[in-house]
Length: 126
Image (cartoon, rainbow, N blue to C red; front, side, top):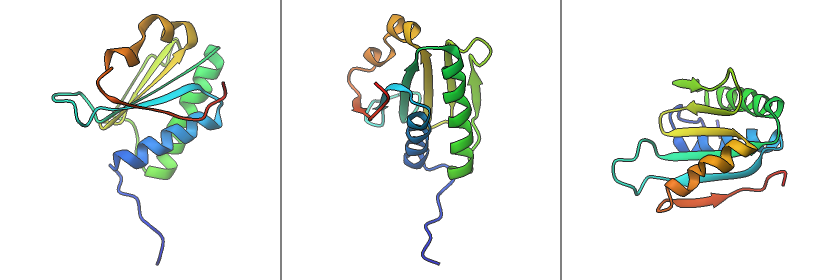
């Protein structure tokens, strides 16, 4: 009684859990892009961060999976890039997570492709 039960597919709760998990592992330049107002977008939110090493990219990935599972009772629909840890994508349907190695993020400028989205920056380990 009194405790709020999270909806398993609540994109905002997943977004918050992802950002928190990234912050816990000292991810750099954490941003979210709100794509809800963009017609035909593939998801509601992108969350993007980077790290200076593959070891840290892996640690951020592991923590995102763990925290979202524990807080939102949700497992990813799909994961890509885990083997080489240069650009890991975690797909939660309404939230798509991108964890980059720093130079890979700089090369692709993913956030610039969605310039018409609402961009929010979060406190990180910069």
